[in-house]
Length: 149
Image 1 (cartoon, rainbow, N blue to C red):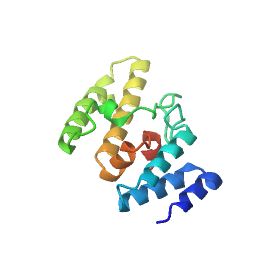
Image 2: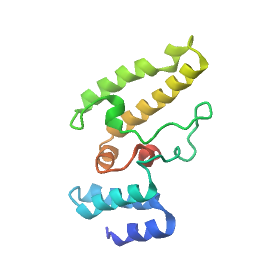
Image 3: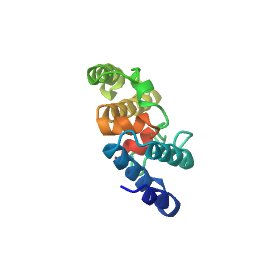
Image 4: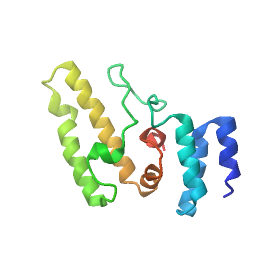
């Protein structure tokens, strides 16, 4: 795949399709430095690591926007070289902690926080359990970029 197309897409149509093209290049050639740089530049240009809004079409909790700027590894509290079994174990631990059914008796603010955290750890797990999404996240794509992928 030629790397000129994603550059044109960034200028003409925004970053989503460009990121998808760069990701496809990385699938074909995981060592392609141009694609890695393109993802980093697209993410920086889009502002995805510094306070983007929620993913399009994503349901918001109690009028608040989930913080998709966080790192999936930090949310699940695992290292970047964690195995799939370690990621799964960490997700189950966090899911049990934040599952909305465990906060039925809590006040509304705590219920909203629990629901938001549960959605975030679920998204983090979906990213880290998928090898393609994990590779994209490792080279700079934010959770927001990968939420709809």
